[in-house]
Length: 216
Image 1 (spheres, helix red, strand yellow):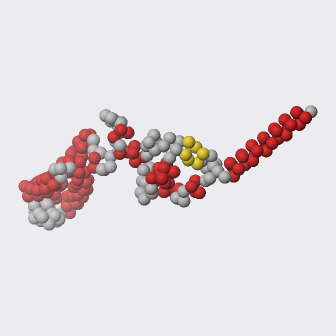
Image 2: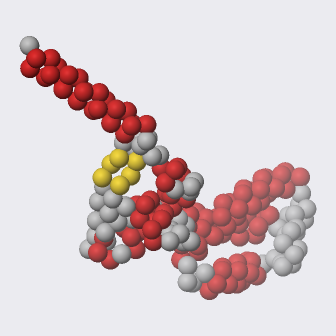
Image 3: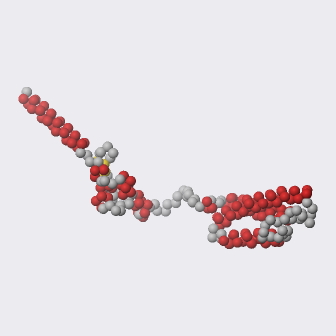
C-alpha cells in the first residue's frame, strides 16, 4: 500500500513538474518582434539579399537557422549558405540554367510584332494608296473647280511633280529609319491609311466635278 501511494505521489509530482515546464515554455516563447524590432517588409528585404544597413548578427537572426512561426513555434531551417536569396538566384552564375531557350518571349516594343504576312499587307496598302492618290489628283485637277491643296505643289500639278514629291518624302523616311525596319513598316501603315482616306476624298470630289464643273 505504501509503495502504491509513493508511486502515485511520484507520478503526480512528475505531471505537475511537466505541466509547469510546458506552461513556462508556452508562456515565454519569444516572438520575432521581441527578437528584432524590424518591420516585416524590411525583414523580407533582408531575406531577399538587401542587407544594408544591418550588421551580420541581425542578418543571421532574420535569415539564419531558426525562425519563429505565427503560432510561436520554433522552426529549424537551413542557414543562408544552403538557401540562396532571391537576389542570388537572379545574379549568381551557379544558379543560372545553361543553354536554356525559352519557349516564348514577351515583346516590349509594339513595332517588333510585324509578321511577314502583315508586312506584305502593309506594302500592298501603302503602294496602292500612293498610286490612287496620284491618279485621283491627276483626274481631279483636269476640272476648273478643283485645285491641289498641298502647298508643296502647284495648284494644278503634273504627274512627274507629284511622283517626285512622294519619292522625296518616302526616301527621307526610309533613310532615317534604316536602323529600325520595324518602325519603317509602322510608318508605312500609318501613311497608307492616311493616303487611302485622301484618295477616297479625291474620288468623291471628282464625281462632283464631273457633274458641275468644266474641264480645263
